Amino acid sequence: MARFDFSSPTDLRDHLQTLANLHQAMRESQCPCAVMLDNKGPEVGIVLEPEDNIHISAGQVLTLTTDKCKASSACIPVRITLSLCGGEKVGLWGRATSRAW
Image 1: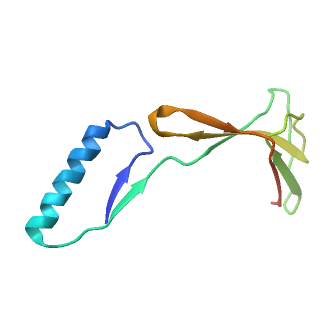
Image 2: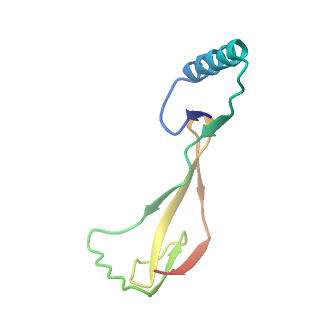
């Protein structure tokens, strides 16, 4: 398996050259090789103010939300950003999830 890491800044031409080298090696060796694209997933940023003092206990239910709210031990606002090809970033808003920690 050949892994191409797109999660860090790399010139696309470098990846294309590596892929061409892999194709040549597969032809010459007559040995197939799977290719995996590892891209950057969504980024989740916790939105806290310097004066926020949050305490979370084991087993407590905590809500992470993209809605604007004051951070507390019950609810913490987050920013979720997806990085797209070309460096464009898209934010996701208006969703919440709760989980016992």
